[in-house]
Length: 97
Image (cartoon, rainbow, N blue to C red; front, top):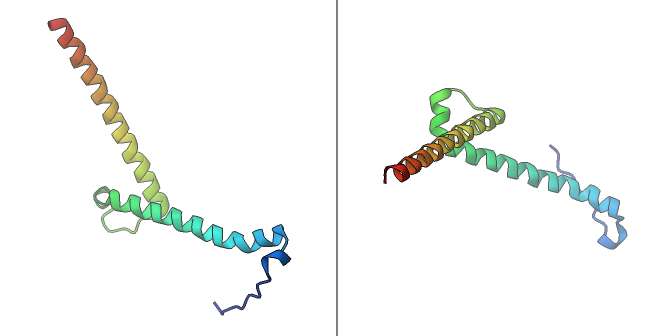
C-alpha cells in the first residue's frame, strides 16, 4: 500500500461529521484488535483441546469460538451435575443423622 499524506485541519475547522469520519477507521481497528486478541487468548487457554480435535490443522476464528462455547457448555453441565450430587449427599446425610 502506498504511503499517503493526510492534511489535518485544526479541530475547530472540522464538523462533527468530519471528525467522526476521521476517527471511525481508528476505532474500528482498535475493535478488531481487541477481538483478535481475545480469540488468541481463547486459543491459548484451550490449546490442548484444539490439538486433540484437530492436531494438524490451522484453526479459523469460527472454529476457536465454536470449540470455546462447546468447552464452556461442558463445564457448565459438569458444574450442574456436581451441585445436584452435592445436594443429594447433603440431604441424605441429614436423614441419616
